[in-house]
Amino acid sequence: MASRTITKDIITLRGSAAIVSEFFGYAANSILYNRGVYAEESFAKVKKYGLPMLLTQDEGVKTFIANLTAQLSEWLEAGKLQRVVLVIMSKATNEVLERWNFSIETDSEVVEKGVSREKSDKEIMRE
Picture (cartoon, rainbow, N blue to C red):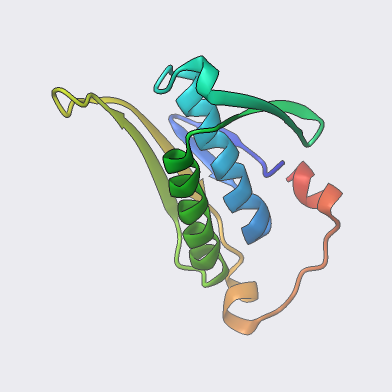
């Protein structure tokens, strides 16, 4: 999986645009499940990267996350993304209950010069 380094309340992600955006989709699902934002029965178990994951089965949420990860991938490939913040707010009061900061590291040489860094999926997952 893309690397996660927790520094204060920031998670740093490195890896290919596709893997980082995919990781964010799984992270969002995990947060929604673990924080009880949606009912437990609205998630289905899948296996990814050799690990059990829970994915929402709510079509609206699935569509939202799919659109979000597609946009994240575009921004990552263009080097236009430095941070993604996922916020859980109270619907009643708009109070911020939790804030998840994902800091994104981009290889500027790859973005600016189109230089390709060849790595196997296994190497990328270790990062």
